[in-house]
Length: 76
Figure 1 (cartoon, one colour):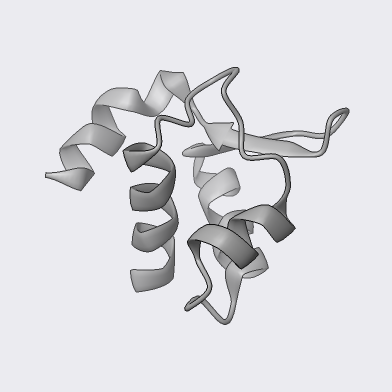
Figure 2 (cartoon, one colour):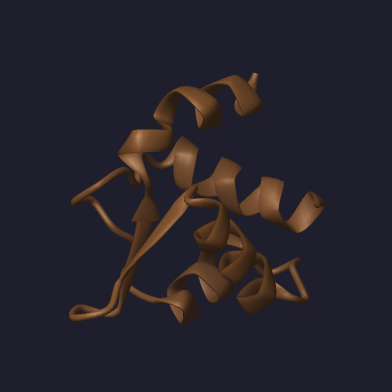
């Protein structure tokens, strides 16, 4: 899906892996992915597939380091 690819690309370009996180879904929506109308659904699908990790205690999100090879392959 194009929205999911854009989310992965934005997080990938900015290096949001593991402990370096986007502070909230609102930050992601308002600053990085304004064009994605179904942001929450796209994030939910990415999380289900294991590409994105929600850090619920802090309300943050990041790319899954365990899927780094797959994500990098997808970005090329």
